[in-house]
Amino acid sequence: NRPEDVGLPAMATLQGRPASTLPERHWSRELYGALSNPHVWPGFVLMFGITGTVLAFVGLWCVPLLQDVFGLSRTAAANYSTVILLGSAVGSLFGGSISDRLGRRKPLGVVCGALAVSAWLSLIFLPWRPGWSAYLLFSLLGLCAGGSTVAYAVAKEVAPPLFAGMAISVVNTGLFLGAAVAQPLFGWAMDWAWQGEVQEGLRIYTWGDYQRGLILSAGLATLGLAASLVLKETRCRNIYWMK
Image (cartoon, rainbow, N blue to C red; front, side, top):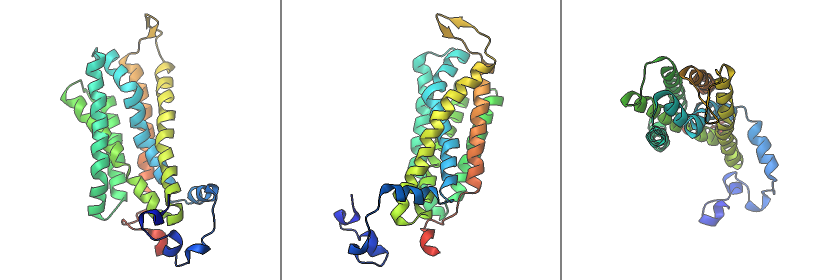
């Protein structure tokens, strides 16, 4: 609950004040401090557009697409969803290490954003099919989603330590909000020109229907890419103290 609980200095001590002088703060002040920091918002949008969109796809639309368009069984289609999640795990695991070795945060965010947009566009326009091409594109989406979590590090490093946890939470909200928004929007895009075919009470969608959803996903990913371009470069240190 507190740094002192594990033998670390108190926040007041780090700020050069006696611990007894640190005032009690309501969490709303920390939230205001995070929301009013303009350097936190690019990370929020990056997670919204890149990671949130991938989670929406893997959580809801990936399996139906492979079933309806390519005739895969549910089990076979689920394997491709697993590949996306594994890619995300790998990207999350190694993205921070790569960023630390580079001594930079922004380049990783930009690369992940650009590759994510490329992967979505490839799904829309390239003649991919289940097999190695699908595994490659789905793995790339997962890697980009995981690598984009470098936005957490940026949020921590652009905020005063007292607000760091809340700043990270704000960026994390972008991920879940992106998934919550992208799932129904994807469905809306598919329904927009749906031909009305129904089998056993279930709507049957064509490749063209799914393409509209993928175009929407690519658009949201482009928004995330744009945010990565204005991501604050911290050079892996807390720049709040550099002011």
